[in-house]
Length: 536
Image 1: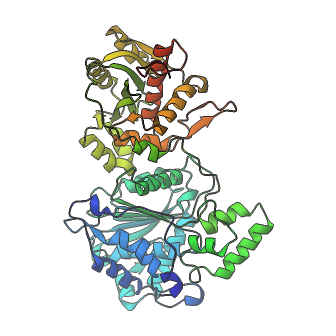
Image 2 (image 1 turned 90 degrees about the vertical axis):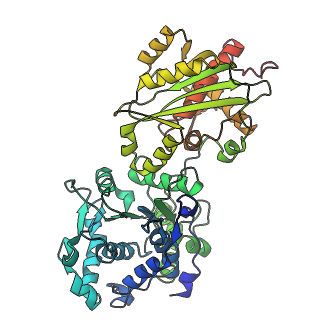
Image 3 (image 1 turned 30 degrees about the horizontal axis):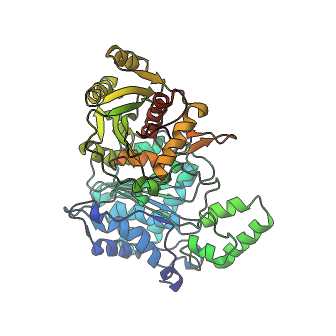
């Protein structure tokens, strides 16, 4: 292994090991060594190393292979079921994908293994499959004797296993029983259909593995890449706990000097081996001379996404610092409600906001989700189940949210406090509003506009910065707070922006609705929060 590989810079983003999240988790070094030894049966098929065995570099073993194949549960099965490997071009992504696909086919001790090489087009998918086929033909005698390589499928007859190439532009293939999937260049995917099919085809396997291998995307915040990358960031930050997902991103920071060699080293762990320093120097010179090429250079060779990183509205550290315990005198206290139904097929939020004499605000959020949405949100499935088991999330039967369940919870909460008013988003709320008014509750529709929500949003910012929100460390509320991206106009009005936010923010919107009616109750329409000692 090369000295350059051993001295590789650590990744920009890396999810934590599952040691604390999975009871009985242990690290199986022999399993890692088994993968490394398997690669020695393969041969390089291009460049100056063509015909030589594939020796994995230290950084590849440390950051890619070991975290995925090494961690086992108490029964001895792999914990990681999905891996996200993001790195710049010429980092050996396709070679790694080809080798992992072959390992899952014939060396993972899985009978009847189905392994698929997939990408946004058949041509791209072949970037993983064709090298795998060539490596079978040129690999060790043991490998050649085991496998039969055809144009579109590699067979392992002894175990009735196969490795096949499929593409997102082909007919979707249902009825799969997937053990392994190598999904290449996720950033070019226009549709998510094939990814969904592959992710939902692993249910009958003991330790399936899907590996996403990609470079950074361009400027599409709505694609499958952005969804997956954001999820990896959330797991790395500890916002979401998901030990079955491992992700690593090799990239330079957004503000790094793109023309400095140190920046190239930060983004390219295989520099001087898989990618030559002279090549990066040439590309940097081109980018310096051509401003139009600069974003391309930064994305492909430094891992810096072309579009500016969208800043979130709230500082998560400040939210976490609001660690005041709930007060014991909440029963019977003056309270205001916030309701956001948003979509009938996803999260809904209801909460109580209780202002206290000491200037703090207690927030009691409750979240609802249709049971069918848990399966649709496959990447978050385990987290959603944990939230539900802990009582933070109420799952309602069917594909659509149960307004009856939400109404029952609101009526039960109204018995505990002096509920003055409920602010609600008018979207999809006519039925439940009428029924709650028939029960004698006061409700006020809150326009979801900048003019209407700017004042309560700014007050929420002030309360968070002051450490004055008693939120009980609710993990769903924390996740939603971290997701919020603001909409700001020229007059510096600000509100949470559902369209641009990283994921669901219903709890934050519900809180803004509650603060809106709280302020109007306290100040006759002007924004002012009643703190017990006057208006502030």
